[in-house]
Image (tube, rainbow, N blue to C red):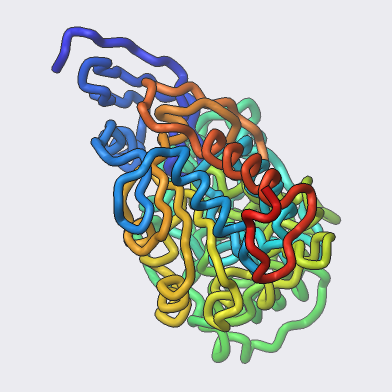
Length: 448
């Protein structure tokens, strides 16, 4: 360990959607590494430990080392000439970078999509159709006496959601912490989160919608046939007991995960849960929040929404934003071989997209911005090495409850930020297009 140490207090961890902002980081400035992350969970400690400064080229073009300026020119040429370009990712970068990415999509008549389309996209659709009763994590900590986790495993995916916000912490109106709360976990199987619950309700796979609709009926005083147990695996007595608890609590919260959205029913499941929260507000106070994975996926939803009116899967090919999941979402565009170029920002679709989508990525020119080498950067025609947000780069991110938080970086990086690279690409594309989108196949040089 070097002797040149500093402590960054109240830094922010951008590993997951909890975006905990009480990290105390001990930084070795000589080695450019974080040696200690006080208050971080096991996932946060790994996040900080693994993000030092790797010696990598500033950029690669066709696998050959290049300068950032040369890569900007190559990327701008690709995007300016593309007929149906795709911009994807955005959930692990700052809101400032996200804004520039949306501007590029608008300028080139492309499609901008975020990782939301492959995780809580159905919830985004449900929000538009049903609405959302919401609260901040601070309100949940201080007020919630009944917490229902549905279709998620926070103990492994979001450890501090339990310890900092929703289960064990003492709050203003929950002075005894865990003793003042009832915790319910609904899932298709037992997980490491199950021991934290007072009540575990195991539903049959692919039957969440039926359970939620039965709960809605009981809340409204309707009769539910006892045969519901054969379909869902949950007895009528258990459902009636849960409804009684939900109607008699002071402040209830649903925290739901991808077990609800990536399941039979998809946005209908999310819509049923959101509608159940609305129904319960006739008797007491209830809120519902999706539990988000990436550090700034909520920021991506917010930025794309307030710039286009829609949260993800937005297409600008007609000169105005259009939203149509299944048509303008990344997996669908790539699987149908419609996109002819892709700008991938802080994401790795080549590691987790369906095979057909990955095969099409290999056929088209791909531009990547990423701090590390990934399967996606390896297939890219142009690959930028960028600094890591929150560790090397300041800016704004949104916690999963839509609260914006300012980042406090630990040490500087020799690599540019996503925002700097995207701004340079945007400016060069604007110059190439001369204020107008080129006809398909026209030589770009003519517009410069």
